[in-house]
Image 1 (cartoon, rainbow, N blue to C red):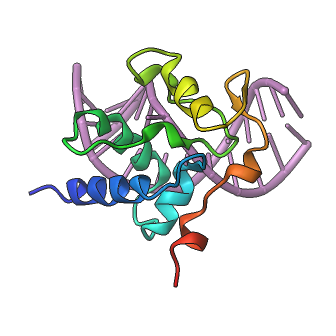
Image 2 (cartoon, rainbow, N blue to C red):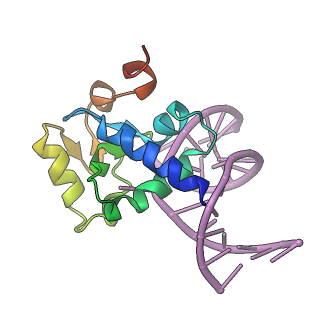
Length: 112
DNA sequence: TGGGTGACCATAG
DNA sequence: ACTATGGCCACCC
């Protein structure tokens, strides 16, 4: 029985709640889940996201600077940027333009 | 037991 | 903009 698998599922659930055209970062998700495990674990969870039955919009998760640090883990290195641009997000040199305007914080958006 | 690594983060200079 | 440092925690030698 692995505890981290529950954590993975929780991460995926949060990522699925990210609205189209919005993005968040690894640390925000870790914080929302109680920060029991660090943001590294969120990134690690994304590493396994592609093998999930239910799809996870992993392209909507970037690092704290709005950089597409996870692009190399997609099928092609451009896919992450293409998916985001398709949702109306502008990316310059692997960095999201107006990141602050697109940022979606689960702590603020999901709290009652 | 210990070192290196990683889709990270924060702070300091 | 950059580097350095410490923390984080699971994984793999």
